[in-house]
Length: 398
Image 1 (tube, rainbow, N blue to C red):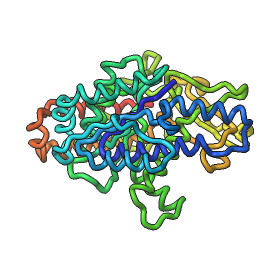
Image 2 (cartoon, one colour):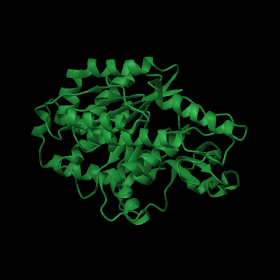
Image 3 (cartoon, rainbow, N blue to C red):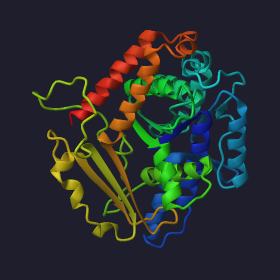
Image 4 (cartoon, rainbow, N blue to C red):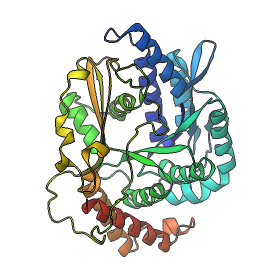
């Protein structure tokens, strides 16, 4: 089951490179913790999922690179080729020199429709190389222009053309201190559009990853390269194959096998409405948790705490909400590792903060003209605010 990765904008392309580099390096690590048979199956599964046929002995990433200007794409292609271990297909990129800064509306309303055919043709070429398509992994920023606006447009097109394949977006949550003056607008528009067209959002907060680099890795001068490598290792440890005790590979149409959306199955639940976050949430209630354990002692790990009904919403039993995958095959250089993928209330406060800041700007009509001149009307903003407030209310009522 193969995954086609779509790398969008500077952020998406730089992270995408680190992800493929981490996946390749991990699959070629000598691992003494599992059998030779299991290691060979692991390597074959990883290659099938993320790399296509070899060219002169070098595997090619199943990826399409998209940006408004060629600089970052050319650097990414060159960096991969110089490694001598894997590379991107030279045709799998699309460049356009003109741009309009960090304007979400330009990426979504102008750049997307203008180059829709070219971008979708490149994606189709990668799809046709797959014996069996599992889905799409879209890597993008949420605060900038290309990654967010064009990313939302491309995801919408993928939903239209490949409705039966999983669309999973990995999005970078901006620093709370601010990166782009209109980042809250861009974030609100991105999230609302992806909520309608994506099957799953994997969110990484820049502030959280920054803390990992500073406090756990003791890096003094933290660069985006450091942050991207942490992200790549986290994503790699989630997406690499896992095996059951019998040695069969976990392959599903949904690579993560967890419930992503809020779908209360029982009648009589509280009516959703505007909920204040002034009250402290007692703790982080979840809809679904997946724990992935790799390496030494995985089968003796105590995961009983994840089966506590108090962790989950009242209309879900732990047996339906919690899953665990284990493999003795370690990830990369780590003797043992654990990854948690959770659909929970964790992002409630950051989401409510972004929506609130964007609403304050919108109420004063700040920078609205930068969006209306490219076809995003005030009504589009209002629809996005309404949807995300509903999301906040839904998670509050877990």
